[in-house]
Image 1 (cartoon, rainbow, N blue to C red):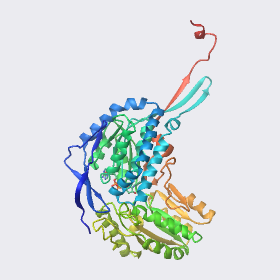
Image 2: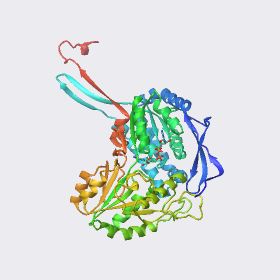
Image 3: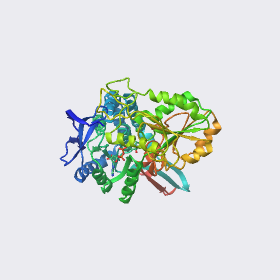
Image 4: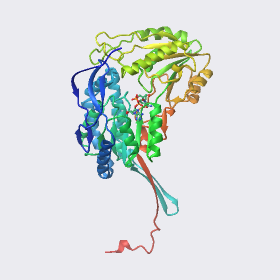
Length: 504
Ligand code: NAD
């Protein structure tokens, strides 16, 4: 397997505290790679308690003024930000591809979906409107207003360097909070650029701060007494830890975790559409997505109809760095360690009795021998209980499971503890309705591959895929980043004793 190499000048990886970018004096750093080539492109400073404390204090100093800024003025900053994101769209997408390895098309999607959250957050004055009811009792009115929570923090994963940070801070800022962003230490550069643009849009100093690091940095955020709310996206064991530790320290927490998403294919499906949908769902971002459709669940004779065309389409996937070679259709894995883990899962599945229908382990990209590539694979005859059927693979692997009928397939799928997404390909409304009603997943697709909801709906994972109460995005996002205050007003009725209008 390849060895990553350091060449050329490293891209700076600064922190942002109180409006000033700087390089912290930290003992350790983590290497950031271009996964497509294996080159080291930056070094992330691994910040600890002191840096986090400085960031939180800067956010605290800016809190009151930002909270008092009218929502319409906060929205104006976001409108300017949206324009800057559009102006720099291609550069941001290149940054995503460079540090993550996904294709340019996927990187553009990563940035576009993030911009959509900014657009949603631009509606701050509308989103923050409260409720009122006159005469809850005679002469008594009641209203509800939404106020900022205070200092919020966002802890991000490696697989969506633009989208996931933008799931968090645009809404948090629109709601009047200040923010500490901790991008993934493996892909910190796009996040830094996103926040530079936010500064250019006119965000006051200290409202947004950026720190870097791993567990030590995260623990400092979780334990800081001034941090009021934490948004997390990452793997499920860490998500669970974040919720448990954050809530123990009195914080509001939302934590989206990993996934195992099933794509049901009924015998009456439109097979051209199903093949296309499955290839996109399973192999988009080289499978490194929480919404990857990583298991095809075939019902009745669907497998026989599906697999010849599906195998041909998967064999036609070509690997490479799409910022340099636009003909490539799939990018690299985030690290050599992760690539080797996925290759190990493939090997294990064969030992447990599955059959490798397409084996991508030997795939090479001769021009980039040090890139972290793994070819696309299909594992057929995967059975309930096999390791590869239970664990999140997070790689370019599609499992195929075969069932006699819809009933037994739903029963098997519902035994997996994750509950992020699921979809079905069928022409039967009856089957689709039964599936939608009974499948244990928070995001469901019918004749669409990866049903990742848009910015104005919640990203609504269930069970081991989400910890907390209020999801990211949409109105739940607004609820998460605000506190509701209900006031009951009693004013005695205007009458004879009221003479104010007669006063000079
Ligand atoms: P990860 O859990 O390794 O890391 C996520 C974040 O947690 C990083 O910022 C990291 O620094 C921090 N972290 C890691 N280990 C920690 C620890 N022990 N204590 C405290 N903090 C720690 O996840 P990843 O590999 O970067 O991202 C991939 C995972 O994220 C996959 O499981 C994927 O499904 C999931 N994901 C989920 C969603 C969703 O919406 N549900 C979206 C994107 C990614």
